[in-house]
Amino acid sequence: MAQMQHIPQKSVGYYFFKSKDVHIENGSSFITFFARLTREILHEKEGEKQTEVQTVWVKIDEVQLEQASEKVKAMPNCMQRYELTQNVFYNLYQLSKHCPKELFFVTPFHSKSHRENFIT
Image (cartoon, rainbow, N blue to C red; front, side, top):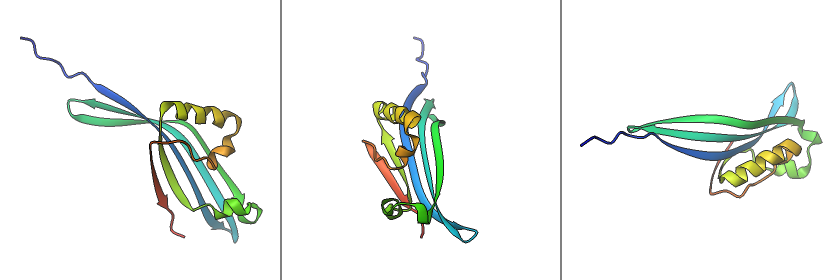
């Protein structure tokens, strides 16, 4: 009887990352925004796991603190990671093409999230 060969398994995860942080540079205060959409492909073969991370879209923006709205200033200084469905991921990707800065302020529909506050 022939042995079954281990067929490589593959799963794909869809993620949205965003962060806001305040820093001082040359005596001026700035807010830096960061947003990124990634697809993470987990390959598993014979018990070994390997993750391939594909960045699909990324945006970084910076504004002077005194020019930012009160709403923006009140946002927490943190990094947030959202696990998304494929449909939500692609909708955010479409939004990134037309209104990229909006993704700094979006909280997407997600299945899991993780938040890490920055030290202030």
